[in-house]
Image (cartoon, rainbow, N blue to C red; front, side, top):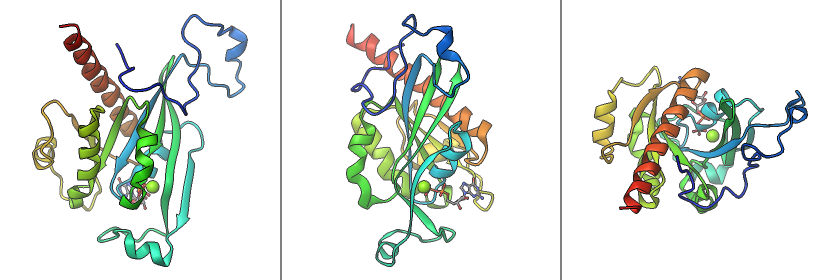
Length: 222
Ligand SMILES: Nc1nc2c(ncn2[C@@H]2O[C@H](COP(=O)(O)OP(=O)(O)O)[C@@H](O)[C@H]2O)c(=O)[nH]1
Ligand SMILES: [Mg+2]
């Protein structure tokens, strides 16, 4: 399986490759990550859709967050319609890590959820294996920009519907149609607060990205 469709992750501490000097001493329980592969995953979607919640729920390390009080000026710009009042908003990103299985870790980068921080996305996307686009069915249109962004750049992604209890339940097919997703782009239902649910989303994304890159590789050789 080939994951190097994009530039090497430049800001992810990639662990040594299999077979390199990864002695048993390295695996002592000292908090050092001795996994053999680290993949970068983006978590995108609209404001208040649950990106920080998802990264926090699945991360094994204390998630690094950059939250700031919504300023008066920013509050006017941030689209907070229908969103339960949040005291803070993520201005930079969330960062977390999850080990999917021995030898495979995912580094999670929550993208800024507001259009005025879009300039950060290109750097964040560099070297990413793929992306989770979180969606809330009450305001599905908020994830259009993220869907467009990843489609335009050929970055494999899936749509994870964060099933808020208050929202009407939609099927994955309905959401795929409403977002006019390319065939093959998975839609999964999840609860961003639940670790197992979040992990399942990430596994589905890794599998999907693997299929996309394999298909591209096969295409490129004829
Ligand atoms: N009821 C419910 N609330 C959620 C869920 N996911 C997130 N929240 C809440 O929705 C708010 C926004 O979530 P947050 O992760 O900060 O959104 P972000 O802006 O995408 O990072 C927070 O108050 C969360 O506790 C969910 O699945 N169900
Ligand atoms: Mg956030």
